Image (cartoon, rainbow, N blue to C red):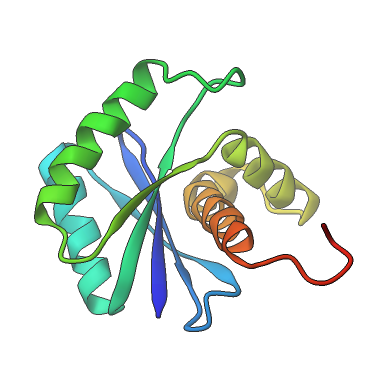
Amino acid sequence: MRLLGVDWGERRLGIAVSDETQTVASPHVVERCRSDNERVEAILRHASDLSVDAVVLGMPLSLSGDEGPTGRAVRRFSELLGKRLAVPLVLWDERLTTGSAQRALIEAGIKRSKRKDLVDKVAASIMLQSYLDCQKPPTVGQE
């Protein structure tokens, strides 16, 4: 059972995918999209090609947990996407994932010119990994 993680952006979608055991998320691809219809089609294509069982869409919230203008745009988009998906759609908090992705790429020594092409799919994998980690029951002693 694989999951698709999506980091929504006005110009780019970062896409990540989990392994079949839903233990590890990996960056997959960045899709350049100009419209909601292009975004929906890209997600549907990857969901089908990768035979995923659900799509986890990053919800950008403010640090206080409120939905700002971008959060409202993602919520509207999720309604469009949900009508077309054949699998469940989950909205998941993606606060600070882009910053985390930038820092990880800088620490890895990736040049600025290359980071722009990678940051969205790395952010999607960080968001999806957060979701996966929260689905696992705690092990003994980690309560």
